[in-house]
Image (cartoon, rainbow, N blue to C red; front, top):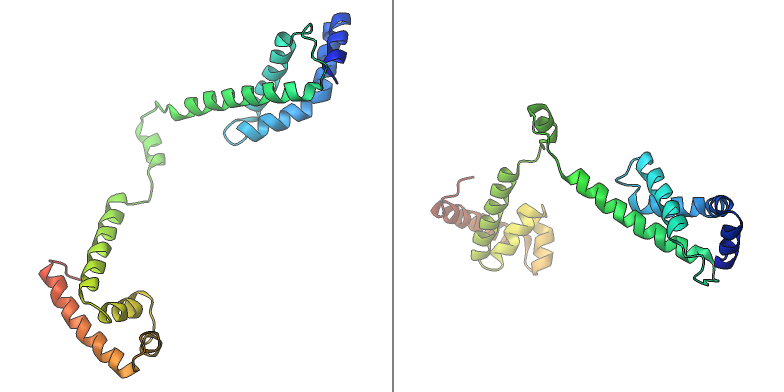
Length: 188
């Protein structure tokens, strides 16, 4: 349907023009609206937005504008703008949580221990810093052995050493690491 066809139909019968516009673009508008707000909106919200799109088009389209092009571009623009406005309205409504009873707050609790996770990551960071202080190749041996669970032979190939030398260096590095951790106040 072109703007000229819609204008001519509107002059003859506004109801018929509205019905023709709705029949032609209903599925198109629904798809646009659903893609914009379908994740956060109920089916009723989507249908209400679609109805609002057609009401905006019907009441705001200037039939005397001389627009002769396809109505699809105009319908597309109105549908996207209305859907975006509806999205913002729904998102704002959803983010304003006012109910604070114990039952609801219990449902909102998470199994995630943020404080514990933070403490563990801080401890890991401190341990890695102390391992780095061992120097090379000891720090690489310890990390490869205990973080990546590699065998002495694999580490030896990686560092260009013999497996017995890697085992001996690992044993000595672990003794030094234990002392360094104790000095830092970390006991494992």
